Image (cartoon, rainbow, N blue to C red; front, side, top):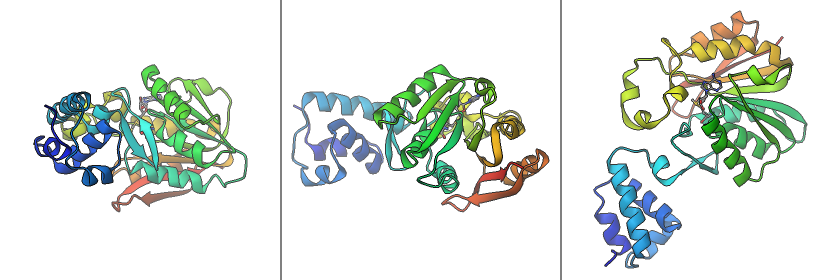
Length: 272
Ligand SMILES: C[S@@+](CC[C@H](N)C(=O)[O-])C[C@H]1O[C@@H](n2cnc3c(N)ncnc32)[C@H](O)[C@@H]1O
């Protein structure tokens, strides 16, 4: 006999917030529904799905991979193990891009290493007059990004397959954003928590974590209009190195901004 909502939640052994999130997703309801209907019995299908999901989570799999979704910048995004799970700190990168893409004005933006499409989708959704190009090296990730653009009905994103700027020929943009792999190879965090399940190629940026950032910065000037901005997310201690790389590549007005945790998380500069 399938359990009630109350009994199902009590039996998981998981953190109660995670158990509630999994049950909400399995039932397709809001949080308030679980509170309002504790005596409701699950159907046998719901019970089977919830029990499979709680076992996967108990085995360490990230909640977003288990449910196949994650909220980012107020948008529900499809997520699979082919893509990095979008992070709250990446919303800072979106904010900085939107500041430089005034609403109501036509512009071109590029999202390098789009993964799930999180940044490109958020920018395209909030700036409908902006044409967004989203590039990605891994075909499986591009498929997820395309799916997210379709879910949100966005016709102003074009997806390209390639190694950073490779497929862009001579195209130039008003704003380039990138949340590249920036964890140093050998960082012990790679063996912990959700990172164990995420694609290595989405996380690791060479020995010091800056390999991808170096390539993106050095290619930036050829793909920006005069006065265009390059904006990069980076690791908690990489802001000074990023500003230095930007300055060496001829960017001016270099800056860093802090995320909600108070960490310098996004750095950028303006093309001459
Ligand atoms: C840290 S993830 C960011 C994903 C997404 N933009 C986000 O913010 O959630 C970095 C992304 O860069 C992609 N990537 C890695 N190397 C690349 C390369 N050489 N060219 C293009 N994309 C690359 C990875 O596959 C991954 O999707």
